[in-house]
Image 1 (cartoon, rainbow, N blue to C red):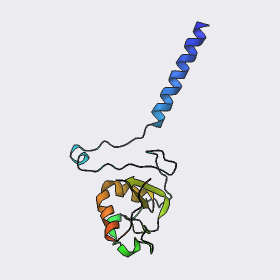
Image 2 (image 1 turned 90 degrees about the vertical axis):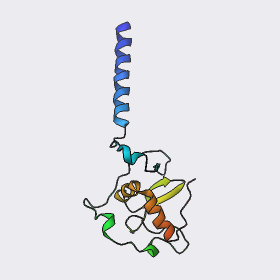
Image 3 (image 1 turned 180 degrees about the vertical axis):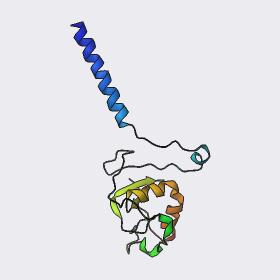
Image 4 (image 1 turned 60 degrees about the vertical axis):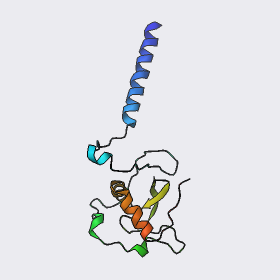
Length: 138
């Protein structure tokens, strides 16, 4: 009886350990000099869970965001809402977004979201310069 209880407890501990290890999000360690300079970006998905990775159906080798000019008028819809991706200038995918300083920012693809996270103030400034009324997160 005692052997079975110990064995069952051992199995539960191992399964829990594997579950916890498999759920960890792998990230690169931030460089000390850049970590303090970057604002925190909080990622959420529509279900409200935090930190969940987003899959993208973008091309394998996307063109770097810095290589093309973005027309500010393409970022703003007639009603003032966000109409274009602040990184690429392309069409929005309403399933790919993040919350930054209480603002919900939408992107064309997951690569654009990653570029945004590298310099969020640059892209928020781009939306504001375009006159976009950025959606407030609720």
